[in-house]
Amino acid sequence: MPKLVLKFEQSVLKEVPVGTKEVSIGRAPDNGLVIDNPAVSNYHARVFNEEGRLMLEDFGSLNGTFVNGQRIKMVTIKPGDSVLVGKHSIVVTESREPDGFADWNAQQKPFAPKINETVMLDTKDRRNFLQQAAAIGESAQVSPTRVKVAWLVVQSGKTDQREYILSDKLVVIGKSAMATVKLKGWFKPKVAAQITRRDDNSYYIGPADQIPSVNGNAATHATKLSSGDVIEVAGVHLEFAYRE
Amino acid sequence: MEFAAITDTGRVRGNNEDCFGVAEEIELFVLSDGMGGYASGEVASKIAVNSVLDHVRASEKNASLPLLGTPHPGASSVAQRLASAVAIANQAIRDEAEKNSARRGMGATIVAMQFHEQRVSIAHVGDSRAYRLRNGTLEQLTDDHSFVADQVRRGKMTQAEAETSKFQNVLMRALGPEPEVIVDISEEVVLDGDTFLLCSDGLSKELRSTQIGATLGRTDGTEEIATRLIQMANDAGGEDNITVVIVRFAPKLVGALVQKLGRWFRES
Image (cartoon, each protein chain N blue to C red):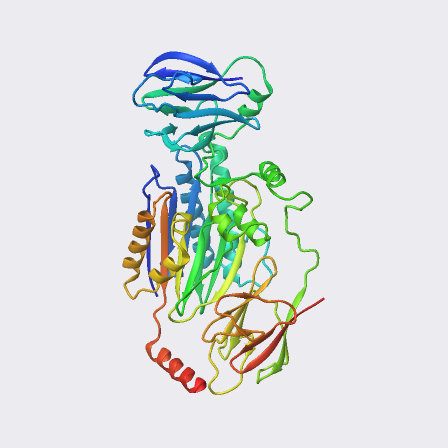
């Protein structure tokens, strides 16, 4: 079971164990850990157990609560962390009784993920996290079951081909040499519009020199394409379609 | 092409764990936001940026340098190379973390863009972003690899809920935690007049996209715009480190005029 050791400079003042009940920290005498010092708010912070983790939460105190030098609102703490409340420090230590929580805590990574900082999850944490937060029965990964091949079929307008297979991540519609869908005609723009394929195999059409329309609606931003959508740009009508 | 890049600690953090790098000669721009206790975030983001710059520069001298990671079908060779560089950065961070136990668990986001032949290839892992401003419209070019962004994509959360969620800082993908990293690649056309922005979440979490778009569209120099964006993010709270890299392609004056005339003729 972890303990909070209250220190002022180098002197140990008292020790309080953290069990299933939370330990509130503050100047008021009804706190679990009372710190009698004007720099400490009446109800300054608390330490509690949440799903096997030891959590420290600041109650919006005037002078703040600091962990390893950083001001926190709510953070995980573990043995070795140094907590500062006013001028007092609270050291988290592990008491000697073998305990499930102690073993678990010892395996933690050396840095405390702070709630306002970015946290990365490793595979095990990610799976647990997703299980807790996501709906039951939903898979964590987006796995494409079949790769669909996307095509553009020319319905009207002058282009170099009647159909185009969209194999590249970037497909340009225009007169330029980099265009896949090459427009024919004097006043056609070099790059009329672009179609990009994202890593989840979805296709988006976006404006370049012109604003294309999808099913009659102007696509001023990158717009996702669905099978059967009709694109109109630079006087050309193209149908976007998936084929097996 | 003109560019400017600035990084700022912000108002709340004690140190700056963001890092950026530019290889001007190959039009490559990289940004990374590091994480980890005891300032190892600084180490991670620096390794990330330098790994990408080094690998891409080396491949310019030797095109047959082997690629690391899974190939991306339909992507240009520049994009494949960027993806490989990011995979190498992942490995470099993991190697360093293994050597030094104080750095165990450190990680970083990354976003890299390289311009070539009228297009830009972008590789990213994490929630640092790339944006493009074209004709006054701001487009986010990268999907965040954050838990909340994933929830929004699946329709389980609205954008507004995502922005206030207590899980908004949880990343699903980053450099460091896993031996294999899935790198997202995208390619976009580059037009005269386009302005591109790379930024860490220290900017995108403080400012609305309308503010970012309006500021990027100013006629000031890129350095003034970059300074202004940082100032705005700090004024809004500056809760995290802020980094911006701006690359702007000057509009072709004559070309723009002809386009405008052309449009006028078509519409009348």
